[in-house]
Each structure stands twice: as C-alpha cells, then as structure tokens.
Amino acid sequence: MSIENISNPNFDAKVFKKHVVGKDKTGAKDTKSSLIITKSDSVSISKETKDLGKVVEDLKKMVRDLPDVRNDRVEEVRERLKSEYYDDHAVMLHVADKMADAFRTE
Image (cartoon, rainbow, N blue to C red):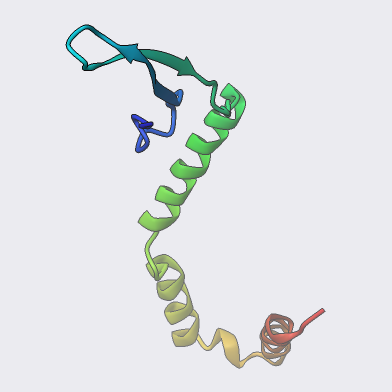
C-alpha cells in the first residue's frame, strides 16, 4: 500500500491494493491492481474572511511603518518647555493626573 501526495494538504488519498489472482502458465503470480479513492476533509474560507485577513495584514504593515517616536509631538513639548507652559500650577496638576491615569489598573 502507498499513499501519494502526502505533503500536499489538498490531496485525495489514493490507496493501491494488489490482489494475487493466481499463477499464469509460466508460474509467475498474476496480479490485479485496484484503485481505491477516498475523500479527504476540506476547509473553505469565505470571501469575507479572506478580505478581513487582507485588511488585517494591511493594518499590520501600516503599524510597522509608523515611526517609534512622533517627532511632531516631541517638538511641541520642547516649545512648551521653552515657553514655561508647564510651570503653570493648573497645567502641572493636569499633567500629573494624566500620568497617574496611565499607571492605574482597573
């Protein structure tokens, strides 16, 4: 017995069996081969799921392409530091609240 295409996940298993029928006039065995085809399991993926997979891959690529540091925000904070914006007591409280929120767990 042999199984062909085992490395291919989309194959139908083909099983060959040899049957000895008898001996011919020369004394050699006379054999007949039969082919048994069995159906394999299959999975089908809907078009919507395939489309969603494409969207997910596109989003992953977009995230990978984003810079690690947002230079525009860094420059904005530098300007605010120069202008003493953060020296205002109300701004300090607001920044402290935002920092505390970042460390809180729910």
